[in-house]
Length: 510
Image (cartoon, rainbow, N blue to C red; front, top):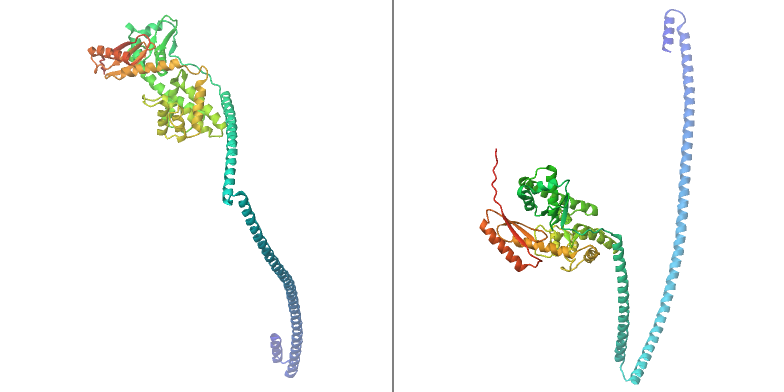
């Protein structure tokens, strides 16, 4: 528009059209523009008015819808309230009705109670009259009659109870005897052990008889050194390819057998070598004892034993009880105890442990003054074993009072294992005790280092220290020991006492 006006003005300035004409044209143009603007504004106004109306109607409709929804909710809530009021009214009426019924029942009960009280009073009066009549007829008061009735009932009840108790005791005895026999028989049947009676000799086999001369040595020095070191009598006779080792102690026989085997295999047999081999063999036997104890506990499934108890279990292998091997006996008693405890519903593991340890008092490191059962209980207590096991060990020969159920089981199983035919031999046990007593008697003298009972107890060899006993004193010592044996011991035949005093001079060439 501005450009048009500028053009028109420039055109006028150029002298074309007159000013008036241009003015009219401009006024007409401006009026048309204003008219068009007004028309356009009117159209826009109408559009806006229509949009506003539509928006208003829409909002009005939404508002009315919300009001309708609220009204419906209000109506629903009012209906619910009315229903609740109706149910409450009904419940209130029912409650009032029940209250009225309860009041009626109370009135009825009160009236019935009064009737019952009246009847009770009448019954008491009648009872008193009857009691008075009975007292007049019997000449006895009611209290006396009551006491007499109570006494008669007591006597009758006592008689019946005594007969019932006797019947129960007899039945229990029969049942207990049958059950005990069944358990013992079943236990014996489930354990079958082989029994081998321990002997006092071991036969050592050799390849040829030439070895016998090497074992004897020049003037018998080798065999004497071997007997002195082991305490075993070595019998070399005309038996082909065999040497007999005789001793009541299985440990000594085993040491002698192993040492002799090593000496024969090595070929070097002389006194110094013999002592060296015997010392090594003793250490080897000690290690084997511990290994046997460990293997025994593993086989029986017993764990957590004190190392000292394990060593003593291993020593049982080389100990016999009335000719029966002590380790085999203890293993058998352990298995018997476990079976019997399981039959009775007791702790089978605890019973097996007690059965294995019941004779550990028979393998002490030093000779105790106590019986083996009591000594074994003290050892077990020292090694912190269960008090039930300690009591079972100490009481299996009735030297302690039994405080647990496992104790009689151990005692019974010990008797089962030892009383089986062929299991034990009394003669061997008494013989071993006699030889042990013989050695201990000689060992009690001062200066005595070692004592060995050989030749089935017919000879006692006493080894004394050269620095403590002189040559002249050996004769006196031999006589004293012989006199003491004669006065204190009982034995068949005669016993030879040999006192050995040896002087050694040892030097080393460096």
